[in-house]
Image (cartoon, rainbow, N blue to C red; front, side):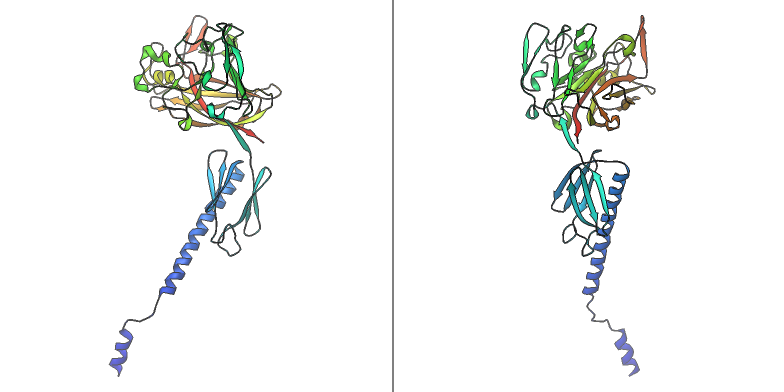
Length: 380
């Protein structure tokens, strides 16, 4: 009998453990869901503490996707019964827009309120044209009637090659305004007694060229080109800015490249996308007759300074375009300008590590071209 009893205890059990494993699976799912919700909650608190602003709130099949002004996103996931914490399956009970704020309510009744703004974006794309037909005098005695952004693109890029932007007198009017949209506008600066791209300015373009196709004697035939193959995000059009080479604009009596609000209202320019233009890219990479290729101590930066409604200037904001032999900003890159605050205009200039002195003037060595696209303006 003793031997039989021992044999019975050693035999495998017929116990069905499916329910146990189902409970384990449920527990793991809850842990994973809580971990996701904790990460979401942490991201929302960080956004609140960092002063981020919501620019998009999209409802999806799985919850809500909140997009912030720095391009980051946070997804608030549904629980099994929707965005509801009533049954303990989600930290969140609702995501609601109330005027200019988004209210996120947690299951325990606490709320997170984040500001929300609307962007309007200057894209330079014909499909996005809001302005009506306008006319300007092109410096050759001809009147140009403009209805699309593409009409502002010079067919010829080389120096003196286009009546749109060269050999223009003081009264010439190559200008553009994103009227009815961002309200941003630009007119070629009056430098050296002429409104001429050789004296600086911002010109609409769609020209691209591979870097390997450029040579030193052709780089200025591609003044309005980028090496990215397109505008930002694969678009057709963008804008190329040329800055005079003088180190001290004020001493030389020169106007800086300026974007301003044509309707006179001060607003926040949140960000734009920038890259170096083809002539600059070539000279940084290979050098030319005026400068050598960039070495360890070289850099190129783009500087923006806001002009407030009262005419005073803001502290500048900078972005590094190139540094040393290897770092070159050759892709479209987001540049945050929001710290300039509400401004009626923004001035741009470029700086590099070294310059040459010719006669009584000092000049930067590298040709100062940059391109920009998709300028986002806040409308609150």
